[in-house]
Length: 370
Picture 1 (cartoon, rainbow, N blue to C red):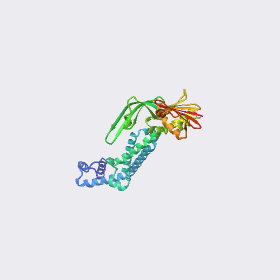
Picture 2 (cartoon, rainbow, N blue to C red):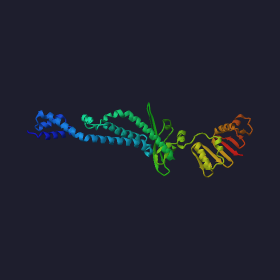
Picture 3 (cartoon, one colour):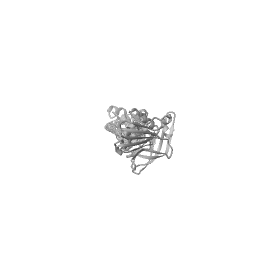
Picture 4 (tube, rainbow, N blue to C red):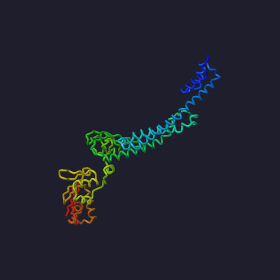
């Protein structure tokens, strides 16, 4: 059967090449059109040359445009996940967001590499259109883990910085917990329920150490800090390290010098000074007593007298401190060693009289200004 002229049949073969027909399929097509088998090779060669010429007319611009787009997406993704997200409430998702950021950035980067310099004539004549081989993901695994870890550390630090600036405190209730461990890992979290100052009820989960996890139980009341702009961003005020970091306190024991400095200060100034030493001091507006329930301490101060109630060992440590500062014992030494050790002591210098008196569970130390 006669076939179309060579130009027309070649154009049809070009269309078959566009649809990825194999040589065998093209030859079968030519045979169905009545083409002499001796002309197959020349027609296919001409069609391939025409197809290449056609591709060279648009592929350089297409590949260059694709390279610019993928590069822009990679840069935008990097800026978004490294510079912008850490400043937002999304930073508290220090596991999910780093994974998303890492996957997206590596996907964009792989395409950037795949399209790099693919618009040159030499490349197009040899390879033609770009075919991205995503099987090369495996070579990005180690860089991906490193990037994900760095982002996680960055987000965790950013979330803590936000919490420091935007923090408010609340009392939460432990409602559940999860712990798992293996030969090389330990993982534990607790979930708490609390109410913000605005009346919003929040359920939030916080990672804890395995040793801390053992100290929690369902229904336990626990003090926590949350970020006003993102109440899911919390930390538990359960140890000195966390309190020191979040509240900026020294978290050290009070000494006699600290109490002496409270004289001639307003209640507000006293409260501020005490909370720089230990977190948790509050002022009872009814009787102006300063109380710290966390450390079981209390201070009642007047213009010329300050009474401190603290731990039982304060009786000893305050006595040693005052003696080292030049205070002299003014009450008689008891002949009974036991009574002398645990009995009332009066120390003085030119400014203060200090009475140290232990009770069954506490120390009562009174400073009297002369």
